[in-house]
Length: 114
Image 1 (cartoon, rainbow, N blue to C red):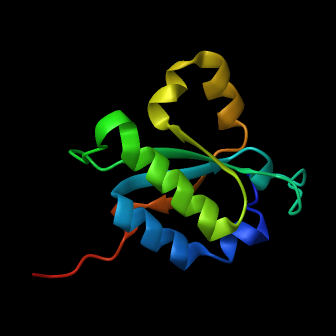
Image 2 (cartoon, rainbow, N blue to C red):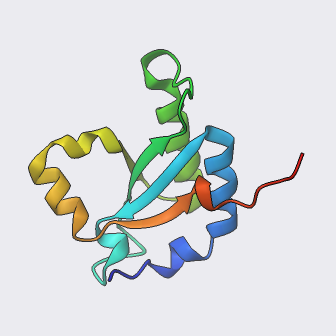
């Protein structure tokens, strides 16, 4: 079981808002922010992202870079944002799996009755 660094947990509500705004289906944290190796003064934050079906990613995946910038502003540090499709690489998939932790899941959002 991995632990999410306190800097990440403290902004869970704001993170959910960013994810909703950009059409994120699932956002997972991995790497040092899930370990005791995280250095609040130097570490970047690594995320895996999966967008909702039919989300328009824009020309040249501009939505991905806009989401990356929004996450960087939210946490005040560099962010690495990788699409979950990158997990096709066996080495990367194995390394990410060691610390991978879900921080946002759109399917868990409260539904509003119409």
